Amino acid sequence: MGASVTTGMQMLAMRPCIPACKQVLGSTSVLSAFGRALSTRTGFGSCSKPTSVGPMTSSNCKGVIVRAMSQRGSQGLPIDLTGKRAFIAGVADDNGYGWAIAKALAAAGAEILVGTWVPALNIFETSLRRGKFDESRKLPDGSLMEIAKVYPLDAVYDIPEDVPEDVKANKRYAGASNWTVKEVAETVKNDFGSIDILVHSLANGPEVTKPLLETSRRGYLAAISASSYSFVSLLQHFLPIMNPGGASISLTYIASERIIPGYGGGMSSAKAALESDTRVLAYEAGRKGKIRVNTISAGPLGSRAAKAIGFIEKMIEYSYVNAPLQKELLADEVGNTAAFLVSPLASAVTGSTIYVDNGLNTMGLALDSPTLST
Image 1: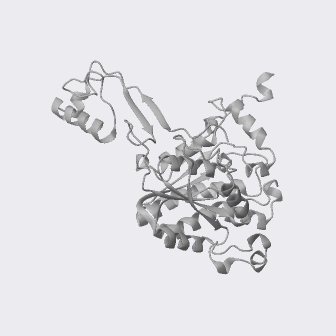
Image 2: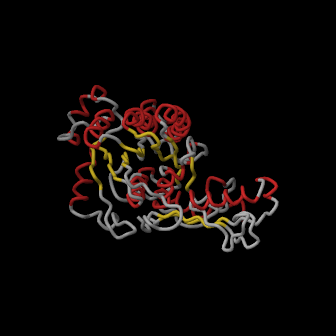
Image 3: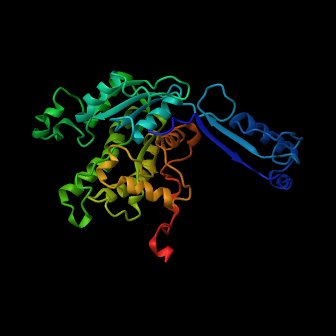
């Protein structure tokens, strides 16, 4: 799955010394108070040789260093999710974005619950039990990520009455119960009382390999149902048990706003709907439950689920060649971004689409285009 989860984020922000700021903020006493509050309450360090006017006006100011790290007790600005509980929908193996997000949240101290697609449940739980995921469960401190409970989930169905008879009779669902969205939310409430974080990491388009012009109504609506409305349903049913100040995130893709030939079957439409819903849900969940809602537009990853598209390796190669940052995109980088978004550090961020794709979304011209070499 690539490199292990990074223990945190590190940023170096250089600020020039501007004595003229005294004219903006007022007296030196105000600046001193501002400087003390900034360093005490947010973790921002002062200049190496602070003067009476505070860090923003010292002639020796070299910059402001901010460190975000998961280790408790470290100096700096920590991503600390200790005491928080996260439900992550859509984890069925150890090589996708959902797993990486779970690890990042666990590394920051959160308790992890996961919802796994019912037909994949037995394989996933067996692999966990037999230690097949132990290597990828390793956290930065050497411990293994613990999953408090795995819930069977099929987010296509909101309530038991929605489940067709052929699905009920399907042997892949045999032995599982309480796996519709409403039932899972109720079971989590009975088991744990509440959650703080809700993660939507699932999608499905049965006709994803078909061009949109060849996509059936049934296939199109199935993609919307599984990949977009499922997020609406999850938040609708989990919101009553989410603690105020909590956060929810989903995963989207650049095909929502750019043409990606081959990413068909209505999946591009589903991702566009997901991003639009993120903004509306941010307003509604924010006003109703003080819950923040964001989505991460992640670059291509060679996960087991993504391979269903059929040309994921070419998409990864294209990204590597054409993105501003010419490097492999790691699932852990998406996980770290998710940890930031659900943490108090992002307390004013909601309704946003955050790109984690090495900057590929900014490009308007493919650098490997044959026309550039002629």
